[in-house]
Image (cartoon, rainbow, N blue to C red; front, top):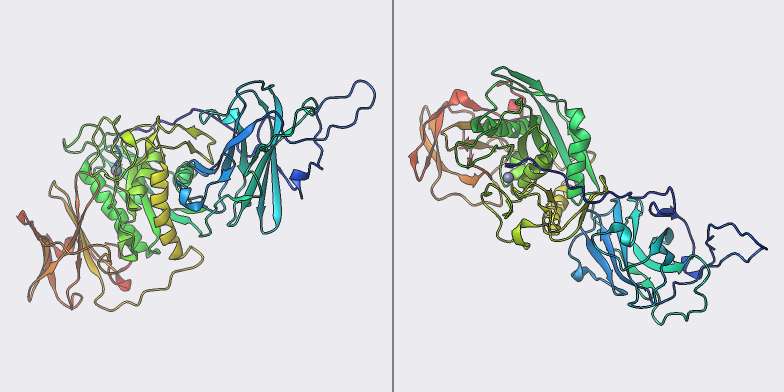
Length: 549
Ligand SMILES: [Zn+2]
């Protein structure tokens, strides 16, 4: 869950891929051989006397060096340092294919005798025998700084160029006469110093599939139908920017009716269970994420006194990575000013991500991940939004799985979700359906969500137990059939907040033929209240799908 309203970080607005003018960014063009200097660069100044020879660019003089080349598809990844390439083992984060990516070129000027002047950087990107040359001119007065995008050169590399096997070389050139008398530098202002180096674009496809479910809410004087289309762009962009994907298949569901109280935690918990049921009933592929978005007229959802603050979202689980975990690729959140960030956070839980402890958060997050590498939940490296063109400061922003207000994705989280994204992408896309699992008649599970308040929501679903989880030693589901009771051990997981227990038990043999009276959970606290058969929604067999229950 998330407790706070996220605020956006407007540190620096840049133009990615702008080509309007010399200072506005990089422009793309084709060039067979940029290093030969044959494509002369005009000074842009009208000659006033005589007919001077046009200036032929020469490599930058005066001892300037390229100290760093950095790719940023969302998090900063150095790909060149001090003229050497950064190999795969030295990389801090994955660079996904076919994604708009910022490439920054940092320069170091000599300590003394530097004459401030305009230089041009030429970035030559090569893949499959095709060169793409991007150029940018910049008045170079000082060393480049991480915090100042325009203190160095930068290029918006379009997704069409970001292909596996892509190599780069970047070099600096004089743009006007005056430095010819200086000696050619022993080390050229080039990176890598000789030849080309890999950008390091991953070869695997990386996509996400999301269904946004607008809630049609009516209870206690509040009637609100969320307009899914209105939020498509904001939600899709927030998720896209902070996940290492090349694309998101983003669908809007028909409105989902809710007529119970969504101003308390029981309502939110029930909605999350129902969104899980909805994705089962819809029969979607196992790699599809469902997210319910509701408007409760801005009411604060308290959490029973466990914490102060308002709960704004909840996920069905810290979801496992197998196909049988599909039922828990479901979450819900409140419509408010920070609802796109809440969406990214809750989907993060269903990508298997735990909370990150954040020193600046007013509320302590539950179940924080002890493996997080950065102090205080900070993101650690510079972030960049490939859609909003903003830079995100490494020690001002915190990871989006924390409860801190100003959030972005850390490189650590970026890598963790990328592995899950790859695994799920392999299962198939909207165009390529995964191979159907053969179902036996008995296959199916009973699923329960048991809240600390005593609220229980139970349903049946197709598939089996999670292959990632073991059976609980203490949790047993008792199936109360008319002809006797059957005890089945259960898998148990705990939701990220408050904490609801998820119970999954295999349906006993002959389940469909026997008369069920009810089920009850037995755990370390003893026997829970029995839930009658009429309250259990049946979704486990193909013939039960889309049941109007
Ligand atoms: Zn959370």
